[in-house]
Length: 499
Image (cartoon, rainbow, N blue to C red; front, side, top):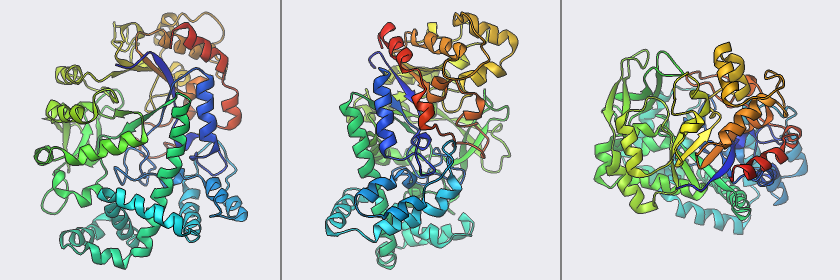
């Protein structure tokens, strides 16, 4: 069971910095110092994988590879792999939003310049890293090469080429053909893992744990699906029979049709769920604890016909349940996994969480429906992680603004809001502070608050709108904003509520 603690949620991409996106650089170190100064013990991040064309970390092109945009150029400069002029050429003026289009144009050319300057010692380190990670890295590198060689074409126009290559055991020939590019991809992944290892080690030295996030599903257009076809529910042409999603819920009246391929759990069971075990092992190298997103799909998952226009016509299909998690607990223990049990929760999900012993989740914003809701702080179980809101929610201030007058009055009364103008945002906002204080008094052993709520920011800073593909994941905090957060108040809150 988790010990009584607190933490904050901020993705790497949202960190301050000069390069259009947060990186594994000095500002990550400063953020860990900030967490320590607040008396908190957890830094929660979103998934680290390469993102899709909508920049979503939950639609990754690999379950194992890292997002190269997080590589810190300053460290490459300090190692002599970049010049000062090259470093300055990739600086970006706007500190408040992630510059995805700018990064698409500049990041890989910059990293390639660094790659051309590696010495024999670094080559040997990369080779050792590649050998240690060959179970996924070779497939990812080759698949990425094929994908890049077919830019401008739709996925289905070149997938047959990739599939044929894999099935005909022509991979070794392809490695020779694309050797230089594959070695560059391996270099980027090595640097990603090397830089993050330093950040994580620093956090752990200060007693700060990294709270990671594991997406339930993998993108159809990914190296994992390409290299492991039989592990997914696909037809003979390599296309999904049905796809993942969720039925109508709090976020969408039509449900959400995600489009990810579903797992072939019967096939995965034959080898003891090896692919999943490798995935979890990789995650535990990156993070101290891992939140499994959409945990309810292990109990039963929503299967949506490919041709369906929305997710409404899907159906529930039983997941692997304790047959899977029994093996997970035998291999890794049960104290490093958090169950994201949001959405439509039935008795089967509740029993699975009880059987695993994993902490569940509670979200304060879901609680104020004028019933004795399980998300209200006084109802939180000790073995849970409680939030004001997650990356999929509005900010706390944005939530108050969009609530009905009756709902808002209920929230403020429940949180013992004692004065000031609830509607005025900023670092000393009184209404959001009342919500955070109420959350901290919860029985939940771990409380997490997004950085946006520590700042009293409004809805324009929320990270994601579920079911809406565009305009998400871009929020960034500046150094000045981070410095203005009331750290003394948070530290005193942790002392008061023994977190």
